[in-house]
Image 1 (tube, one colour):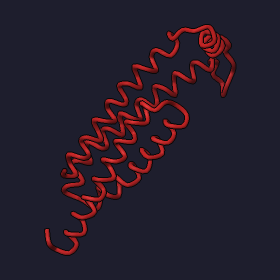
Image 2 (image 1 turned 30 degrees about the vertical axis):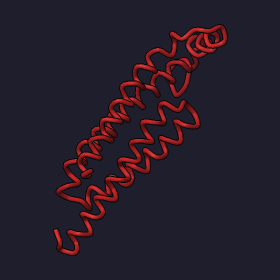
Image 3 (image 1 turned 180 degrees about the vertical axis):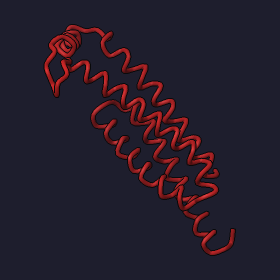
Image 4 (image 1 turned 135 degrees about the vertical axis):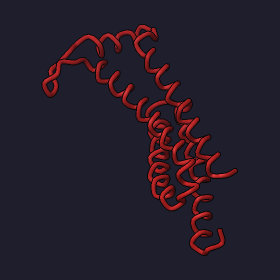
Length: 149
């Protein structure tokens, strides 16, 4: 597969991840069991002053959930754009793609440890396709440096 296709696949994986993250997060207050209902009640009921704003832990949980969804969408957009940029400028693509891939690898382990396996699958697959794109872009860059392209 060519780097552009690998990066487009990575982007789509991040967009799907963002969609399911948003759908899942929007339902966290609706799940029901006696123990879960009590936790939701405690998270959404008591409000406290924190840095000049009055909020509950549920408000902060909502804010972080929406923020992460936007960050995942941004990662998808960056990966999509890199599909075009990296072909024309492989070195620039590598300089951007390597830290993005490292972040996605960290997200894989974070979601695997603190959340649930389904969420980590998207980051795991994305990190694999990004790593493959890095290897192919590196070959393109080295070939261009040697003057064989």
